[in-house]
Length: 97
Image (cartoon, rainbow, N blue to C red; front, side, top):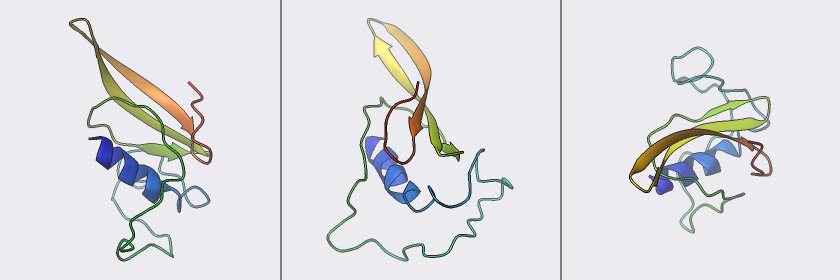
């Protein structure tokens, strides 16, 4: 799951200055991305992360709106399960809340 998160973060770098994805599957909920300059394949050397953040596991969709990245995860502590929602500055990776 963490691999999926990091791939999402890396792909987000091109959208930070682009259109918002404030809901699942984009602004029109159709999964269509109309931006230009999207990579057709990953470089052989791999992708370089812009930032990293500690998150737990889960299967949340990520949303980007007004320069913020929103996601949720699951935290297990002493036989209890807690779902949380996190907000990060999409440019810097700084956790807002």
